[in-house]
Length: 402
Ligand code: LMR
Image (cartoon, rainbow, N blue to C red; front, side):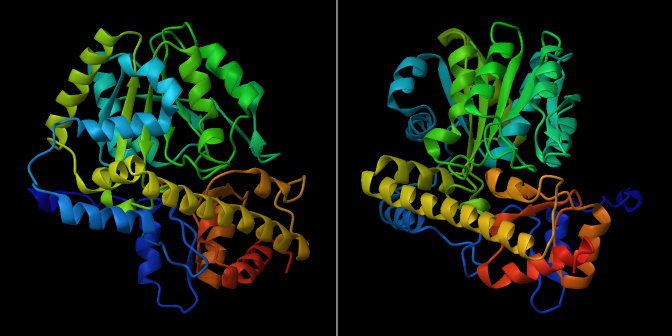
C-alpha cells in the first residue's frame, strides 16, 4: 500500500537545513532556520540551563508520566514569566496553562481544540506569516484567511490596512497575532498600535490567538510583552502559545505552553478539559525535561538572574549584528528598500525580510553557499562577525551592486 505514497516537498525552512547539511563547500552559512548563534557560530547550551540540568539530575526521583497538562509548578512559572506578579494576581483565577511540545505543538493543539468546539470558525493570519502556520492549521482542519500586515515598499507595518482588515473579521472567527518579533518580517506594531488593535478585538466574539515564540529577543521581556498585555487588558478572553526554544535556547527539548485566559474560572476549566482531551489524543502527555529546566530556572532566583543576563546577551548580539549588516550594505552601495537599509535596525527579533527575490536568494545559495529562505527572510542571529563581509558581498552580488 505505502509504495504508492507520493513524496512530500521539502519543508521551506527545515528542508533548507537538510540541503545545507549536504552542501560540502567550505565557508557555507545557514541563515535559513531561526536559531540563535553566538559570535563563534555555536548555538550554546545556556549556563543557566546547564546548571538547572545538574540540579534536575541530582534531585529528580522519578520518570513517571506527567499530568496531561504538565506539572503545576511549571504552570506557575509560566504564568509568572508571562503575566508578572501583579497581573498574575488579577488573572490567575481565570487563566490555565497547559505544557506543550514547543510552540508548534501548542499551536496544533489549540487549532484542533478550536475546530472541535467551533467547526465553522476560521483563523485569520497575517500576510506574510511563518510558513508552518498554515500547514499546522490545515492539518487541524482549521481554515485560514489572511489579513494585510506588511508593506514591502517601506519594509514596515501596513498598520491602516491591518486595522481595516481586522475590523472586517466576522464574529466567531479567531485572529492569530505574532506577540513580538514577527516571523518572517521582524516588523511589530508599536505599543500604541497594539492598544488600537486590542480596541478593535475587544468586546467582540473573536478569539485572539497570540503566537509568542521570541519573548525577550526584541527589546526586553517587559517591552516585548506589550502587545500581549494590550490584548489581555482589553479582551475578556485570549490564548497565548509560548515557545521556549529561542529564549532558553532549548530548541530540541521541545518546550512551550498554551496559556488560556477565559472570561471566567468555569470557562477556563471547561476549555482546559478540551485542551487536555486533544493532548491525550495526540501525544498523550507532554515531554518533561525542557519544562523542568524552565521551571527550575524561573523559580530559582540565582538561575533566573543568570538566564536574564544570557537572554540580554543574545538580544544584544542580534541588535549589534543588525547595525553591522546595515553599515556593511551601506558601504557597498546596496539599498534593499527605497528608503535605504535603516529598516534592518528597526526590525526586531531574529529575522529580517530583506526584499531579496527568490532568484536572488537562489543565486546567493549557488554562488556563495549562503542559505536563506526563498521569501528573502534571513536569520540575522546566524550572521557571525567573521562572516559579515561575506554576507554583505553576497547580497551586493545578487542585487547587482558589486
Ligand atoms: C523558523 O521560523 O525558522 C523557526 O521558527 C524554526 C522553525 O521550526 O521553522
